[in-house]
Image 1 (spheres, helix red, strand yellow):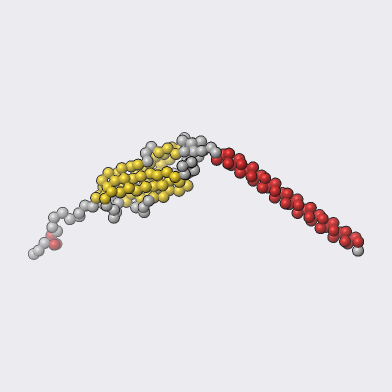
Image 2 (cartoon, helix red, strand yellow; image 1 turned 90 degrees about the vertical axis):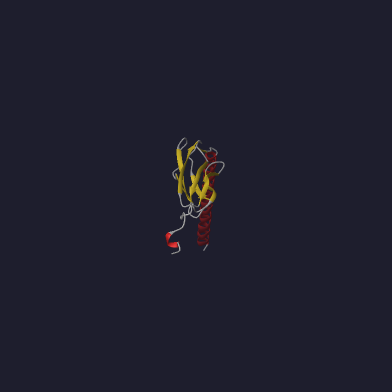
Amino acid sequence: MHATFYTVLLIVFLASCQSKSKEQESLNDVAVDSSLLQKSNNTESATTSIEFAETEYFFGTIKQGDVIQHTFKFKNTGKIPLVISNITASCGCTTPEYTREPVPPGGEGEIKVEFNSAGKQGQQIRTVTITANTPEITHQLTLKGEVRVLDDVIGPRKDKLPQ
């Protein structure tokens, strides 16, 4: 009976030592992960920046229904790859397309913006907001111009003249 008791006690002791070993492994994993995080944070201290050739485009006066397009060019003037994570337009009438691959330091990219003036009239100011891995996080590009409504009928129409 004593032998069985000591056998059970030995199994419990070994199991507890084994679980301590697994706990220690978990702590070691956490230590490794935090060291990777510190290395990652040191890398992130290197910054990137974006420089646009222009941030505003004046498209002049157009007639309602015209579609204009403009390409904004930019350069990565930082030390790490520039990543554009999102672009949003201020209106559904404005559609941006952009370089989705990371732009290496010194590399160039472009953002093509299309504005559809259907249903619009008067002064128009449309913005595109860029979210990137730069210290400023967001940047804005602007399209400005005027949309005029032109009457499709000049003078009386024959089908409306009295007979």
